[in-house]
Length: 87
Image 1 (cartoon, rainbow, N blue to C red):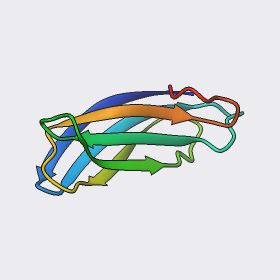
Image 2: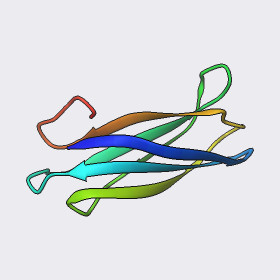
Image 3: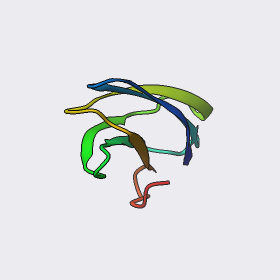
Image 4: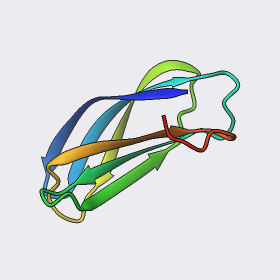
């Protein structure tokens, strides 16, 4: 499994939209992907974890609710059972 941050948009004071491209293997069990929104001081102001359900390479649009305005996005990555390090 692998993931790539395609784009993000700071929608408003409390919302960020992220497009994450996920390449999910047929054998992946219990996959999870996480993205974070960061403030200017690099504090995490929002985080969203989702389950990619389609195998192969697909773009997933994720909305992150933030506690204050974000200025950047960080891809934590995706994991599956037996794969502790996000990719």
